[in-house]
Length: 205
Image 1 (cartoon, rainbow, N blue to C red):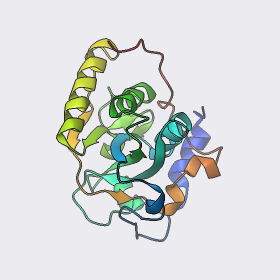
Image 2 (image 1 turned 60 degrees about the vertical axis):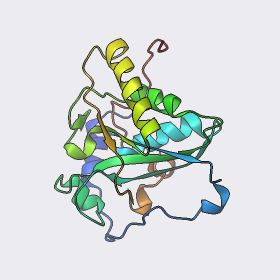
Image 3 (image 1 turned 90 degrees about the vertical axis):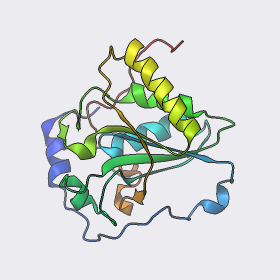
């Protein structure tokens, strides 16, 4: 896991894309995703590492697609530069499209709570700001129920009462610029938040 200051500075100093356009729910792979697929939308800090870990864990276990993007803010058509300023209210987030016959929402949320630190408000590792907050954005009442149930359990059994993850109804989703998608696949030496690693917690009862 890359934790050195040079890689962090590389992330901060990397030029922003000149394009401010983003695509809302692109349909590039829509023809290969069945109508029974479901969405899981979460925020856990820098979205490069979040996407990378979810793809690595679930690609052969029911994951159809995973896109990084922005959610939870007030402005329309947010760009990476605007989100990084902290003024739009958006979180860097991941939206997973998955097969509920092979992979449950509960499994995804348990992994979410293992792979980041949900006890640091508006921060992950050295990354500071509301765009790096921990959040679950539910898409229906059943997801809200499961999110609150799992959060209660992990707060008690894993994180000793420290969880500050927000649980909110999902609003408008904006895909991040294309160069952010699968970023660490194309840049294997790129910045990874040191808070992103899989914790060894006991199974939830």
